Length: 229
Image 1: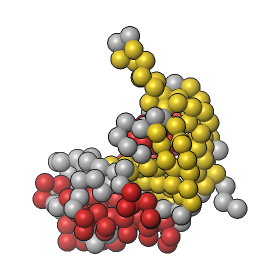
Image 2: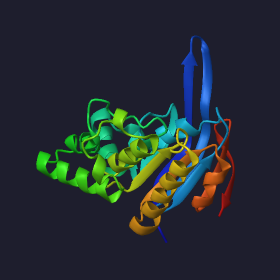
Image 3: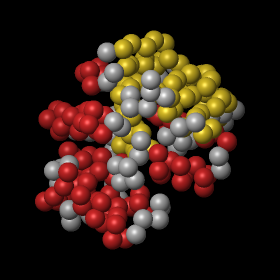
Image 4: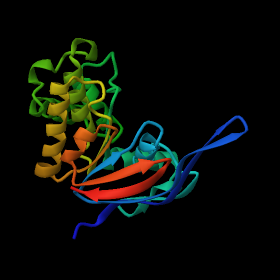
């Protein structure tokens, strides 16, 4: 039986806007097993991205606890949190979030800088990851010289830089044409099946959930139902 790699225990996130409190998450309970492919599905404003930010420790809860591989990350200071996040979690965003001034190799190598990897080692790994994802002919190209699909593949390579156990994908096909989107989903499927990565996909696109093993439907900051594929 696979152990839980992520657990959210009654997590609330409340944003203050002037004098008004706006709850984005309302006591969210969620467990994700190591090696699972989970899709979190919900409309705009349901709390999907906030939930992903909590899981990936990009934000801290107002109330509740978050465990990553058995560690309560809701109590860590920012320095320890950044180190754990850098080792355990890889992020893929809808808007790619690549550094415009860096070429493909530089973008992929960047997360390894913060983990103390030597320059020679990080350049070698970055090149290998890009070649593996079919971008061997784009190593020295900057984001502005790449297509949307190529940018997202660079972003996927970057998410794998520190060989994380968990890949968090926030609407990863949202800015792509259908062909590029399909290629990205096939890459995620292979990462899950062949490399046993835990993949959490956040999307509003019903067509993408067929790649997952389990779907959690989110509405108003809470899971309203769960379905296995």
